[in-house]
Image (cartoon, rainbow, N blue to C red; front, top):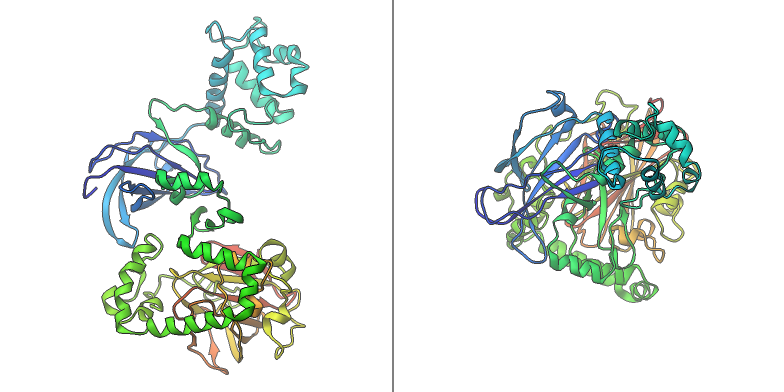
Length: 553
């Protein structure tokens, strides 16, 4: 690293994150930490390594990160030599802040089973001769907690004792465990972590048990149980506050005291990422949107107050003085804004809003299936949710009262053709690229302005049962006529602190998918696309895309 400090590293893979111990004060930390990961053909392949400096009591600072495709790396050889990877600046991926050394190796599933058998055999091998007598074998079966298996211990012992020498060896135990997993699993609940094991997932169960029992090979085994690297990196002061509030992490939105943690899935790396949001704002949103009292206050004049402060904030962000807030904004969202993708450097922007609606360099967002107009693409950098029908969206995510397509589109548009159609929601957070693009090719028929409130579009509000953000907020509905999808409704929804919605196209324009359609000024917001019933099927596609095609796959 470029300076001395106490460091920790996190490895995020799929929906799991692991962390090392904290190093000594140094510019060359050595952790000697390891972790076994299950690499599946259709599962996650990319591991993200994050390095934090630990100089504060409440939170630690992300200094650098790198990503490695484990499948590609391991095809270089079964036991790859240590690799030197560049640690990239979280705010600008074209800057290198340090280097990190890692090594990976492959363990055969058969060896994994033997490793597990060796570990559990040692627990009840009282005379340490490497064999299990009937008495020791019986104690082991009892420890598994499987009542049915416990009733036929002698039968299982005979089945395991292949050579008939009256004892069960490590290889014989491994063979028994593997064969029983295929027929009638001996272990239905992990004795280490308590997780219930799925009968149909036999290989994963064996690997799960092995990883839980694993004590490493002399190196420090990384600590697990985290969803994101942000959660894994918190300092002890934050952990204490978490414990006091009994809060926990989970995918999506947690209610109650833990509602400050919004965790989303990065479809590209298949890892979980925690959204950055100021804790004071979270408390305010919970007070307003998660209670009848809060919504009651909104009905008694607070809506007008939100409109007023949004208008004032929009004017402020257009002043030259606001440019000084750009570095603080980038630092707050460190690791979530990649300045290397921006068309212009930070110094180019004369106001905060100029930076907020920044353009990207050509080509950094490739258009999926560019020559095929029967495949729709993602409309914005966003947290993306796709639902086959509106009913699905209400069952899984939108909890607002009386949400309907008719309410969303307003009275001037007939909702008949869109009822029961597919619904795709693109939620933009403040740190995102705030220009939105056409998901389909066609002709813009019309725009309809619908006045309304400016509730936040944060999931804390969207999941509130006391208000309906999408049908009560200010929004602009446009209808795009297409040869492949019929009519597509494109709804740009305003939100708290969003000064304005600006469109770069007008009614009658012919457009290609991927063309810029417009942008939101300061604040987070949302775009919703509604497709006609029966026109297409929805396929979620990586981090930035969604397929909606007539005959895809």
